[in-house]
Length: 212
Image (tube, rainbow, N blue to C red; front, side):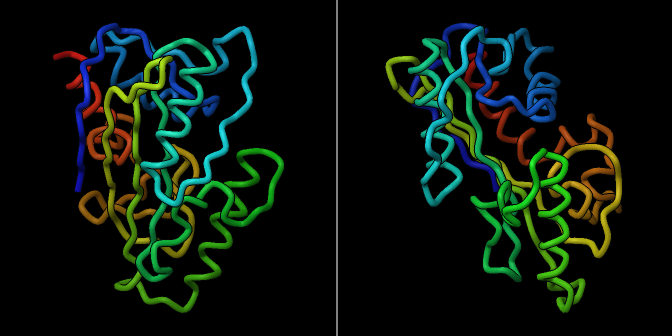
């Protein structure tokens, strides 16, 4: 299910995406830039900014915290997302703790590897038909004065596989098998993934607001 709420209209075509994750930046740019929306990441700013404390218990809450925090700090209209994996057999975990599920690893690649290993360990006795899961992405756009411009949420469902497969994407992409494609998210091309992914769905909702 995807939801969105429009509070006001985005009035310009430059957005600061509150991330230094090149994978996220690439995904968002592939959707927005063909529509004429310029997307800059945090690495494009000359200064460095303290990361807001994302202490909400929902993806939507954390997206708001991040968008408002970076918009106020940079003086630029900001888009932020909070995303993660919700596994039914684990009562929705890892959820908002997806990025730090295992609590190990110094680099993003190491953390991804440790998180995937822990997920497989916790699901080792769960049969295939009970390994349903979905990626969730909540997006918020905020102005420098703290006004929330728009919000959206998208999901991308599938089944957690038994071994990692694929080289594309990041995070839990190698483990989420999409039955309709018979591929993991990491085996999909960027075009295939963006057409149905949680982030793609949420960004398209936001883009429709920007272009009104």
